[in-house]
Image 1 (cartoon, rainbow, N blue to C red):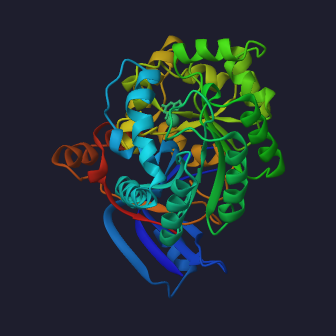
Image 2: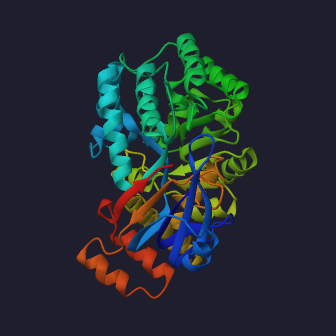
Length: 424
Ligand code: GUN
Ligand code: ZN
């Protein structure tokens, strides 16, 4: 057993923030070797329950759940900030050429290692990430994640049409490769597989149908894709799938809406789409820095809450502009003002933080596993320095409430705040 003493931020099952100004987190390895939280709370009370506990003390620091990135593309690490008129030219001019390089296993391994270093520097301990259409990109990702003992989810991108040579795959082989990768990686240690149709325009009916069949055969795998991100994309989907009621219903028609299905963006939705998300148990990955950068639009937080639609925050690097959860939470706050401001509301700092930790875990079906630092959960946590910059030091010293402290970090924070990421 090991104790960690500092200020302590946790969340309860309802998403309420719990905070101790002098807290103690106690962890212990399970039979699988994974460190889990066994006790947490005020230092005096928790320490009394564990008399001979070795304790690491971080005065002035905050222990908080590791951040969860609900949608990111590790192979797009090198194209952050690539300008384009919008999604479709951005894919054609930057994304597909960059992803074609992942046919080379050495390139994939080098980028995967850099990507995990970046996640750790930014306090992200779990991510649902796209690889590329090349199986080698998935092997590189999981090999590196496994060596680092991380809880990570990824999958081979399926894209058998409307894609250039170099990233386009072949329908039958793509499904054979997907099933082999599920068997190789899903459930190995803390790794999970996500069936990954890129988006409806680049997948044939046969490929989507095959993906849906695998999703039914392996019900505890994840599904990840994109939906209703950009107006040109939505128009294209209506042309390609005239029989489907909406872009989202295309995925429903192929058996790709279920718990553990995570759809990036969900911007150009109507009420029926949100009701369908809720009824199916699928979740939205909200990527405000990407949506602002690519001019895609504004996720409607108010409507998502009203529809009880699962959602959480995501960087969407490389459409997204930053790996930093602080940057993503701030962008989400701005966007939330737009949609919720009509009702005179805005997202609170604790809500934003929850959407990037415990709320994202819930969207993944991993509540009780990561994201809250509740007893029994895996001990992936960050150690934050609320005085990491001169301005933050002034701001944090003047905070009169948890909301004020968290807001200062969200508005002024970045990787300088993250002193360490500790993974179970
Ligand atoms: N839609 C299909 N592929 C992509 C991608 O790589 N990034 C984003 N943002 N949207 C997509
Ligand atoms: Zn994406």
